[in-house]
Image 1 (cartoon, rainbow, N blue to C red):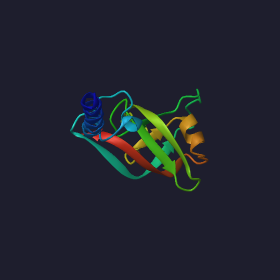
Image 2: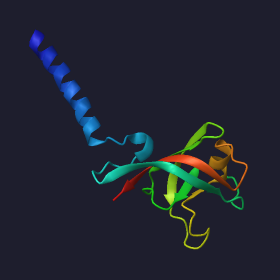
Image 3: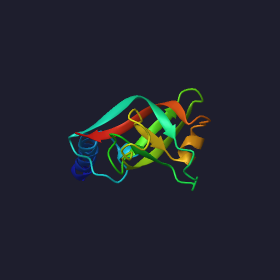
Length: 130
């Protein structure tokens, strides 16, 4: 009776490692999106832009120049040591904010990061699909 039990344990371990190989990015950034091998994580500093004309409806989202649509971006404000995870809901409309704007966040996301100014520096982690 010992063999079937050992076999089950081995199968379980193999499955766990296979799952990890299949999605090295993880659900924190991908959400419900399936992993594709051409996806990569980008980690860098960016200037976040808070459009104060947008009313705060309580949702946390961003528009981003390169991040995978419907995935999630992690933002960290190094000055206040606060972070937030927000859904990428769209691209930045051409000409709406100026050429060097790569990240526009919702009022709620800005508040969770402790932002006071319209533009502030954040560390970001997000997924691109090349």
